[in-house]
Length: 330
Ligand code: ASP
Image 1: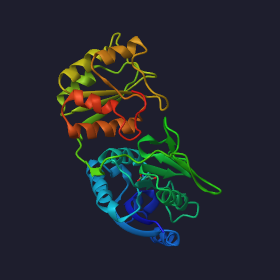
Image 2: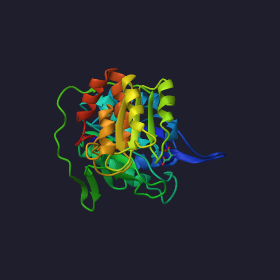
Image 3: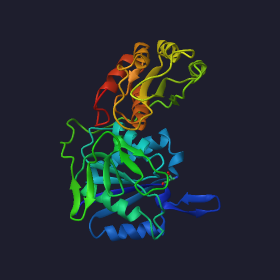
Image 4: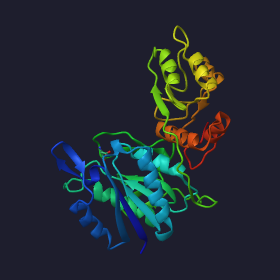
């Protein structure tokens, strides 16, 4: 029997109705009952480490979750983390960077409906998460709606639908079938020693462009203590320079030592800022392309990279390097 640690952090899966809407409980009886059922197949120990709606999960919580996972790794075959779905993709991406050379499975899951409700998707999602650990799918994954998604490729795409997560620009790692978990990702585990590296920088801003974004927003950003800016630009890679020239403002940010990373507002495919004039100008201004990364992965990678170094050259190098499947084309 595989020995699995369940770390619970809150989220809808553990929520009950309160006076101000759904609020997470540390140990809802329905979760305890479901875990008892799974204990016929796995040796499960569980620990509650946080009790938050994931909208409240921020860098301090990422560090706590990463440390809790890292310290428990030697004693278990793998770890399942229950987490609210709203920011699960950010946490999964950040754990990917913080837990270097992860050789064991760490699987995040949650549910769109509290586990106490008869229609809840929680038991199925937990089943998929435990199965992913059982199958030895190393690294950080998200298990949701019968699919196993690489953590740094997961994006929440539905607010209400049960199929809440997409695997963006990367095939799913596995899925639940009638004959068990079909595993499609047979990549070998990373070499090198597993390490916890949870230093990060919170001073990162994400800006989604609209047609006509006022360039003065960049002057305002330069006045604030930001060290990194992610720009969600248009399509394959572009931003406006007539009348309202954004590229000169980006150049000024870069000259000030602020890392500017550019990605696309399109969910799928790699952005390529070298195709159009409207994209090249931003590369010439010194922006770092995020290629086919999800916005969640780009944001967390920048926060993590700024925790390692202040050198823009090193950050550019970190961005171009595929650490754990988060970037294929830069
Ligand atoms: N608001 C909840 C959370 O992210 C939503 C969920 O878990 O599905 O914690």
